[in-house]
Amino acid sequence: WRALRALLGAEIGERAASELELDWLQSHHRLVVWKLASQQRCLAHALGGGGFSVAGLVGQLAHRHRRERVQRHRSVLSRIEDGTDPPSVGMVLCVAAVRCEDGALELTDGWRCLWAAPDAHLLRQIRKGRVAVGTKLRLSGCGITSEGDGEGGGEGGGGGGGGGGR
Image 1 (cartoon, rainbow, N blue to C red):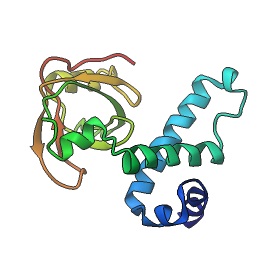
Image 2: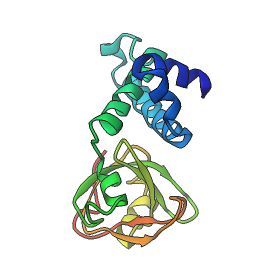
Image 3: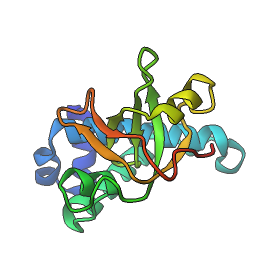
């Protein structure tokens, strides 16, 4: 992580890079790598092999730093987390992981992740294989079922938009 922080320091400044929390860096690194790998897989013909690189990764992390830390942009999950928006607000989230034993979903807005307990309808869709990693879900009417470190609770699947397409 020191090497990545040093590369990022060339983009955003050494002091700003040194002040980034390790969990911020790890979380955004994970999501940016996932995004770039997906783009490379889906758009390889258009990107010509140049889409996934260390420079691209550092550029994306610098962009996220500017958006979050300088411009104070907050994603929908950040706004829900800090209480600015209610968890019932409509949103589109992507499935980042599925926990097989209980059907819990790790959902992301591309900037933050949280674990969610699906409602009965969504759980049936998971078990039928219709909801998997990469599926986008349009959600509304969700609620907070538990609070914690993001490992077991979060938003429950809910009301009006429990389905979605890939």
